[in-house]
Length: 106
Image (cartoon, rainbow, N blue to C red; front, side, top):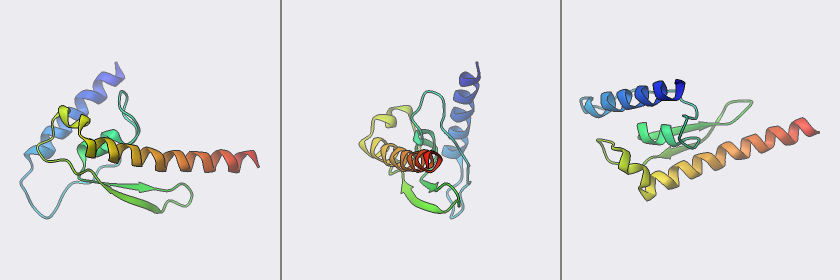
């Protein structure tokens, strides 16, 4: 049930983002992994840029551009730019998780 609510929330946010008046200002959103999507994929779908933070201390590791045109549609999740951005974000998250595991094992 929760996954369905998150899905509809993401769809609603995407509609709002697609309808926004073009300007120099854009909304910011803090996100996490969405059910049904790989880590970072929800952020790539909704944002033009995704800022990936490191673990302790939280510092900017990378700013990843989605490369997707607006308005966004579900079919874009098969776009090579979407896949590449999502995989890059996931690799950054994995590297931080590995560091945490190694730190905890020592």
